[in-house]
Each structure stands twice: as structure tokens, then as C-alpha cells.
Length: 260
Image (cartoon, rainbow, N blue to C red; front, side, top):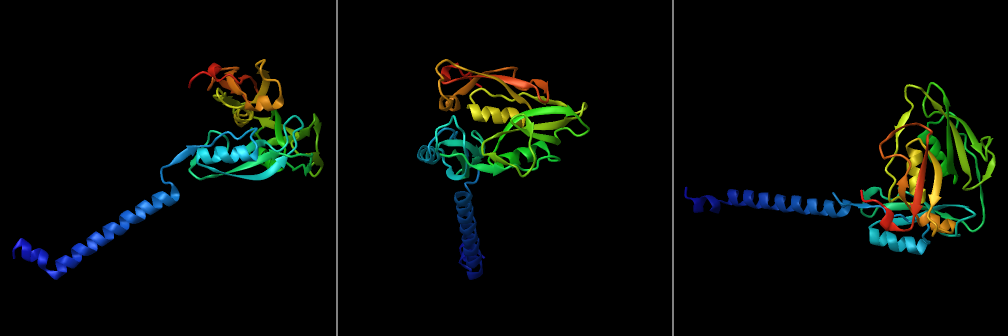
């Protein structure tokens, strides 16, 4: 049988057509999945801190993500209606089109219920604090068999019972256990981070925010939220005992921020 006769055979023709059809379907499905899931495409979450919802919407569109206001707190020193916190955090790598949840500063103070954090891990306690519209304050470590187990909770320097009403946005201090064999952490790299993001990074490393120094041009609380860290107390990745305070210096002059 010649080559021409072989390819003229109806069985061979049908097999060739079937292979082509299946190949086209697989290629089309792959393209569709890539488009639908943004496969392999990630974007960096913008920092929406201190933006109005309209400004945040514009920044989200430009940054390839979407936003939704899901909660509010009351911060006396912050302008009403602007973004106070966001989840995921600024700088996180997410899929294009990811929904970012925003907490804004309300016009009037509102109250929330103090949760019971005793017995929680630090990570669980922080999540509960944020979910209740509160803010994480200082971390006080005391000797205990379990590191980062919550032993007590305070507000304004005094123990606060679960179920008590507190003003949303109030800082909650945690008393945490610290085992001598598991008591060290590392300082995060903070340069270029805005004020709120830097505080989160310090807390997430089981450290405390020490003295905060602002450049002279930073006059208001709103200015401070837009300021970025250009210097920190201790090099990134340096080992420290948990609960150590880390001082930071902030500026609105981006030329002071060292390159990574």
C-alpha cells in the first residue's frame, strides 16, 4: 500500500481527524483555564492605608485586585472614612482579581465585645482581636511551658474580662507564655513598609513596637500612616528574644529608603 493510499483509507482519515479534534479541545481548555484562573499570574497587593474608598477603588483597579469594605473601627486621630487596615496585607502576592477586605475608620465610635483569648495561640488571638474590630497592643512574655500561649488579656493596662464592651479599635495587650528552650525569633525586614504594615510585621515576629521616630515633616496622624520605614533597630534576620522591642524611623521622603 502506497503512502497516498494509506492516508486515503477512511479509517486512517477518521483517526487523524479524531487526533486533531482532541488536540484542539485540549489546547482550548488549557487556554480557558489559564484565563479563568489567571494561572501563573500574581500581583502585589497595594497599600490602601489612609485612602478613601474612592481612592482605594482606583488603586485596586490599577493594581489588578478588587476591594470590599467589610468592617469599621473608630480611631480618634484618623480621618473618618479612610482605610485603617486591610486583609491580605500590603505587599502580599495574590492572584490577579483577588478580593481585598478593608476596615475603615468610622465617623462615630462604636463598641464591640471583648473575646476570651486565654488558652489561644498568639496567631489565633491576633485573628480574634482583629475580627472583633480591636487592635493588638503590647506582648508581655512570662515563663511558661508553652511558648506563645495566651495567659492573660489587658486593655488600658488593666485585665479585661471576656464579654465586656469596649470601644472598637482599642488596643489589647496580651500576656504570653515563653519556654526558655523556644524563646527566640528574628527581626523582619521593615524598610519601605508603611507604619501599620510595619507594626503588623513586628508583631507577627513576636516582637514589640519600640520607640517610633517620625521625620519633622510628619505633622498629623494621617501623615504618619503614609510614612514609610527607612531605618530600624537591629538588622533584618537578627536573632532576638521574643517580646524584644524594635524601634523604627519613618519618613515621607522615599529617597531615604534603602534599596533592597
